[in-house]
Length: 113
Image (cartoon, rainbow, N blue to C red; front, side, top):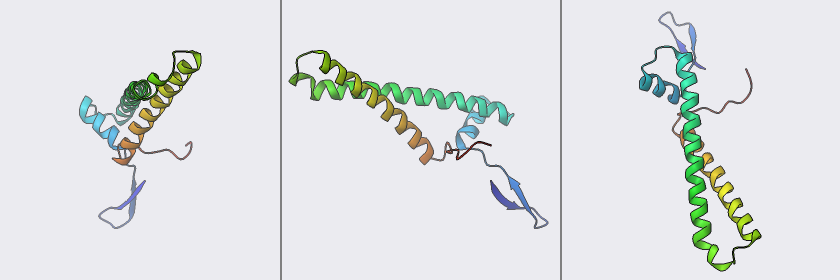
């Protein structure tokens, strides 16, 4: 929370909303902050899943272009392909979350309320 002072000089507490919630309020033209917060959660879910899908595709392309020509298509080869695809998906989701956090679009929660 940020602490501001009102005209009388006494501190007032104003909760700050993450930029993603304010963006969602503007995007959906919603005046209710609780509704905008729920919609921002859905938008965050879609962005994270988009990063996961893109990371998966990039992981598969990197593995197939760098390592697939050296090995015969056996079970261990396919296992390593699945591992690289999974790691690519995790990294894609993590990149989306880091970028949103770096731009102050989201705020990491440190604990339960």
